Length: 192
Ligand code: MN
Image (tube, rainbow, N blue to C red):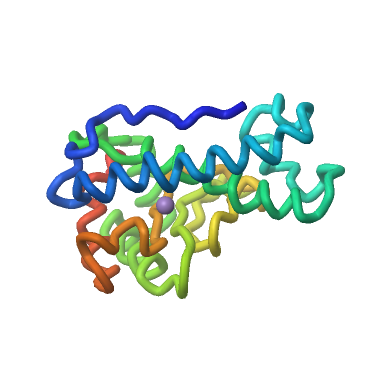
């Protein structure tokens, strides 16, 4: 059984960039929904349910389970782990990761360049999905978007942080203006 993770900050802590109402619905309704549906499918597979969370997604395509259940884990389990990473990537106060900044400068030229590329990918993701900064199998930094609730772990990559670009993440405050949400989010990403 996986539990809805508690946030390290109150729902209104990321105001004005992410509003309290969106945070509360996103956490208590959306993330709780993914959590419940993930647990429901794992009831049939107690061995998978006892695996470390990341391993479930690393091994998702090799698990010996019915295809509809694999898809349910991909969608709802993905929703579970992706939101967990998302909440942990944000904070009302910056907690700058200087090592990460050095790596970003080496890989992308500058933090500004990196932010531009990441923002473009987040803004241009068609439909529901996430923008990701990950480490690949060679420990190189990569930016990309994935559809729906797909996990970088399933590609053999390790997430560093992510940005939710599903409409539920921003629609109450930003409506169709996803670019404004993406730009505002940099203020609450804690690492940079
Ligand atoms: Mn979401």
